[in-house]
Image (cartoon, rainbow, N blue to C red; front, side, top):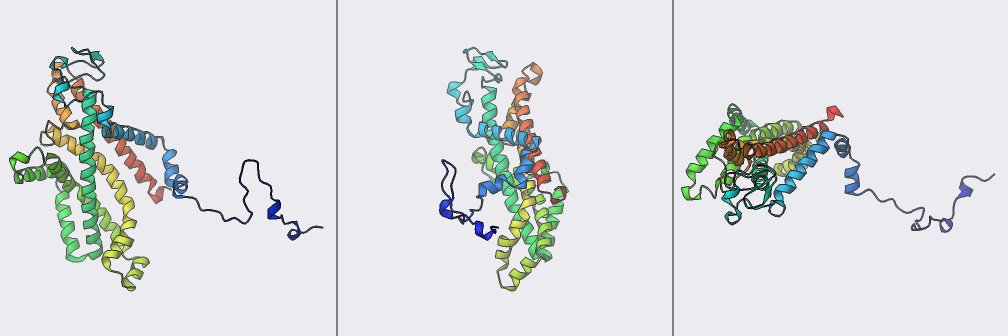
Length: 334
């Protein structure tokens, strides 16, 4: 009887399927690439099996593309005075104006296309939201790492400042910071610096949640064995924080940043609606809602309704995406 050792196949006699390359039996198996591992990960599986996450990501992507490529996708340029016609003002949605142009979402009092204004306004809202939450994340993560790793009076000072700021609503803190910053900026630069002041105000009002979360995680991580081993071999504390502690605290930070993005967009819209945000020459969604509110009771409901719906859809989709990410990264729910 032929044994297993005697039934070995000669590598030169191995036949391959037509059209496929000949591979030696002892050829090394290549490890999967990063894209393959990402597609096979539990996070991507949770994403593609969650209809809410898929729909939210799709809506967010559509709004983001429409906002970024507004100069090429918008039907008209609503902020070019040479293309405006005052006779087209207050044109209802889907009807043709005095110039013969059809406006899908109607026009405002100056004859500007509401759809184009929403696409351009979403650019400002997303720019302020992303920049403010990025600034708040960098500031909060830095202070949280310092407070959690160093401890002592530095930890007490940072956390007491955070506790005092948490005792006030974030919108009031943003209003206070906005007012102080505008008082320090010369009057002739108010419109030019309005967006930067708005980013500063919203960012300084949202750093606390990042700092408190990172501090708590750092207190746990700094007592683990890998941090103790890094201290023993003489690695500088700053390198320990950056190389070892920081990567292990970025999971909760990502979730907070995603949810905080929706809150930052709403905060920007609130400030612009109150008239202390971006100037009318660079209107955001909040400014468009405020402008449309002046004509709401005269029958031109579309001027404020469609920008309001765009803001609700954008904030809701980003918030739902953040909720899914929080559940997907929670090990207790796996």
